Image 1 (cartoon, helix red, strand yellow):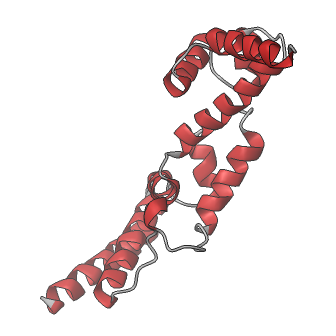
Image 2 (image 1 turned 180 degrees about the horizontal axis):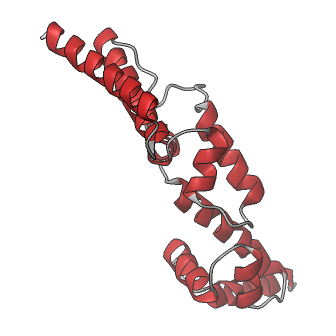
Length: 178
């Protein structure tokens, strides 16, 4: 069994060397993926683990991985901009599929769903404090269309943006009356 593990690791290393020599299109991505497989197998073999657990299972006081924290910080500060998985993975120099997996494991939500929830959070503030139209708010917060904004808002809030605005305004009036 140990010799099989050794043979698989040696095979992966040889494949990486072959890819590096040939430099065919996508060779860097293949090498990155092979390296991840090698590292994970070695960690599995030695009993080491850097893989984080779901937030509710993490040890108290444990910091999120640097990559995940960087992605979250970037989303928090740039959520109004056009953000996609390629941009986020390039930001932290990791494979986008790995980044989505690690972020989801770390925070219990995918990076794109976190981005949408961050935008919806900001939209709630704008809906209750401004008279901007839904179209303006959708555009300001980086949604591709007002209908996608409304659909996302309803999914996360259980009501339409206009229902939310009405509810907030009627609630604030009744609170300010004597």
